[in-house]
Image (cartoon, rainbow, N blue to C red; front, side):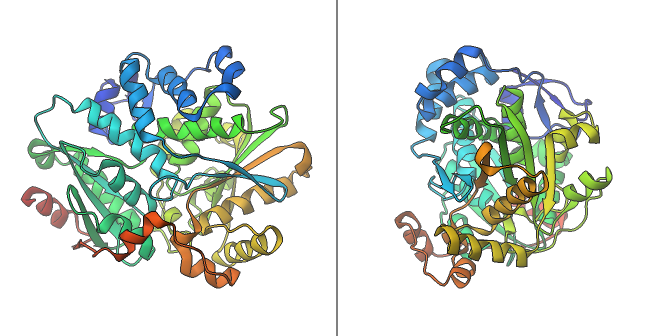
Length: 435
């Protein structure tokens, strides 16, 4: 598998280098040279595959011979011991991606990536330092995906006071090879510090750095699996297919575009945004203008400069008309999100997390705008987190208590271990060199 940088300055690399390096020296993002359609035989046999069998065929198709079949199969079998069921909610279907160990969709990417890195580092003598910026769920998924993986040390940067208590507990109570830095700033500050670290000459001469954010290609490859798995679960695959994706850093939506290029017959992707609406503005005006993020109840989407925008522009050659052909974009306030959570619970007895509510709103608005009959489409919205992760907010809206899954109980009782950090790169750099 050969990959290039979206800035086309850094040299091409193989999968191992792309995964372990994370980010090219030219500050672009790695992209596969080819994402070709899956063979007809795959689609004919899709209904007979288990999730892991399906994932193996997709990964093998993308990765080629970079990993022996037995090792690739082992990585997938170890990563995925949980399901992603498609559930009917009113006129639509929700793809529940929160059945993994940290109750968030990022388990799909982080668990695959952790094991893939472990495979690539089997004979490595030098410790790899993973740097991760998180606005919520990435931190917990990466922490659990890489916990006690030999040869890897993980440093998670997160914005102080801007993640939920449960999200914070999931990555600040583990210890071992996981360190959390509580940054006095926004997610964009955290992400900027991580990106700058990858470009710093002194740090790269002293340490071996890599990333586990969706800027790393190893996160996007496995996230394409569940789009195809959703399609597998549909009873009538002949109906037009629509996906609404709660969008922040746009890794999840990019993974859907990968699936589309592999032959998944997606009629339209809907980028559903909160008040951080830089992509919606771009979609409307053709002008991409990053800005400082604002805090919302759907905090994992609080991103003012989405990294994966570069991958989207690469896929579409920066042609706004082509983007609009495949993707629609909407933006919703916290008030609209809260109303949606209450309305869906009252009508369908289904509990949405704030991010999932934004995705529901986007799908519903698109269907209404286009005057589509919900009975004659396959409308799927992605549920990216269990509502218990936002329990206090959601419980107030629905007037019911949400039961905390057993696997979260111990973490909630754990002691928070985090290190305060200013949003200053030089302070962060010095900390890395000293630790």
